[in-house]
Image 1 (cartoon, rainbow, N blue to C red):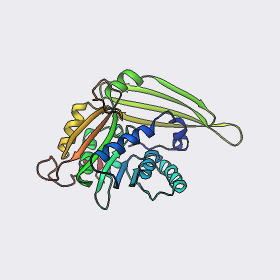
Image 2: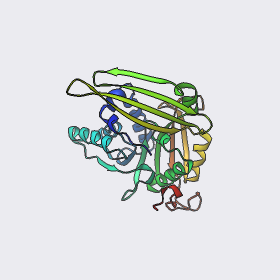
Image 3: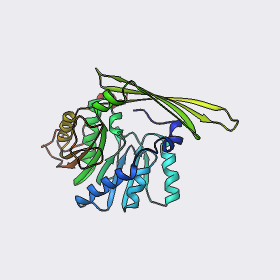
Image 4: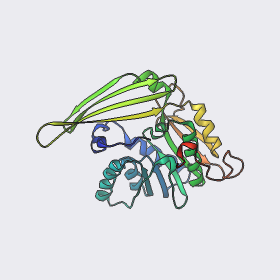
Length: 270
């Protein structure tokens, strides 16, 4: 799974159009409606910790996991400013490990789409189920096939800011449902020149039915599928979907028989 490098330092600058406050409010409201008003909450793919901080503000004991040292460095700067007691872990969310269970797991900003192999995503859902308290919630969002294919696929986005500029080229492989982001950053240096940095990120589009099936196999029950962070029903015509799932038992009733499953072959050490 790709991780953010130099882009981490300007990530918040270029993502200032995202309404994280609205996303966090939706998550907090959804958790509270299920009786989860405090306790341990894990964020997978926490990035620079923006939403992590908002949930900590709301009284949750937050754990943030990300596979980018650079993104976590930004998150820890925010933690130093806020004084929140947030635990950040440098881990790949495909293989994350905790010392105990949590009341809820969240993941925002299409982090789940970075798992481009269905077995890997299925395995992650099973891990989430195993680390959730009985009846705990899993709230995550995903970009849709429609968004990749019809909205951003094969387009180029460019922005010029005081803190830097970027060119973001998208290409969508319809056959494999893969969207490739070619990112070129131009960051100012002290000598007045610009340094070019390049990154490539790949995301996969999944159908709603495929995600529903993985949730059930992992031992969870589907609570809701919403249009982004609203309470409107979501469907394949939405650009972003928010899924809410609940831990539904760690027994032989689910596809993993109440245990953390064996890792897919791609994860095993040589």
